[in-house]
Length: 447
Image 1 (cartoon, rainbow, N blue to C red):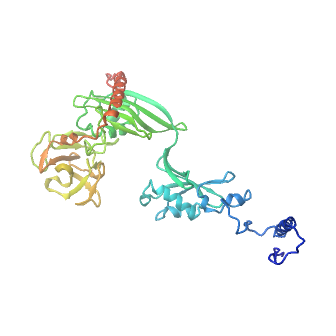
Image 2: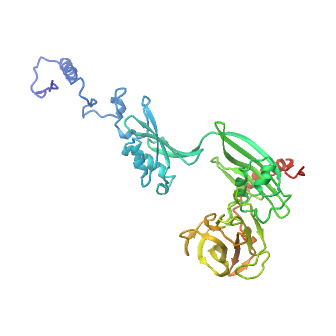
Image 3: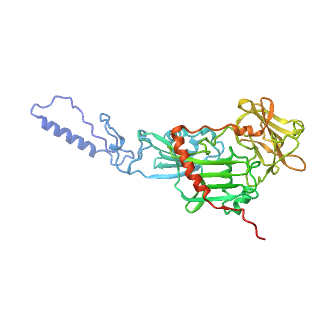
């Protein structure tokens, strides 16, 4: 094996006759000879002399050579080949281990996951969560996609500072405007079918109306629901209903409206006809309305007060086992059997309010006194008695039972004056459009 030529004696006295130019030529010749005698293929990339300071590793890499400099972080080189790998989280596995299974180097994966953690609680990830990573040939992560659903995802990509930044994004979809005015005759699902509207719209509008309308107690035959919605599809396949541009309920007992407002960041918020947010402290009813829940409200003997109390407690008739949810955030003050009410849960809320959920078939496992609970969280299932399944629901304030409608008095935050004027102008235009739609579903049925 040849050895690199070592130039010795460079500090020895020089012959006086050698000029400066000759000396420089000699040094140049030795440098060239030194490179020619180096091993042609040592199995390692060439390294520059220690005395040479380089601003970037890219300056000394030949095309195709491995990129080992971690200071490049997420910035891919122009000639870098990337491979996309998908991996899902296993039981008991950490996200870093999942990326390692995909072939990611730990030093590269760590920075990407740190950027993702600024938007996602990494401790709450579920089994099966997908990570889609772009890796170079050395296993360095160049970007990552974290699906949140069918359309929404978080992308972690290189930022302007050479690190990584996370951003929520959405796949582009095809949008079709759907509009209609439906007369109520039977359940909402039955009515929408009769009106020629997609029944998958029902849970969407139920969620939007939740704080304003009790669909069990306040909707009557002949009432009208008007809407303008966006139907979304991806590559020709139905995805779901996105934004609801406008929604009106015109009924014998209740009138309500929900209208969208686009925020500066592209997201959408919903407000009622007066500019109050539909995000209110309390839901209007404790039953999770779904295709199996075609219930109604009944006047029934109060199992706690042992008296008929019209206008105060409400009995919700629904199939046995239907989920029962907390109408508002609070703390569980009782969970167990309570006299003739049977299995009962009582939740304490702000302003001295308490909500009672009696005649439950079951109480959620582990739910006990002192537990904090969120609005919409499941607390049990509908039970009732041997003849009719139902949920008994009541509201108390400062230790006295009151009309359950008191919950509707707690309104959401209102838009400021500057935004309110523009919003109300939009409400006026959309209301005119909604009211111009012909009502369907109330036609006489021909045998």
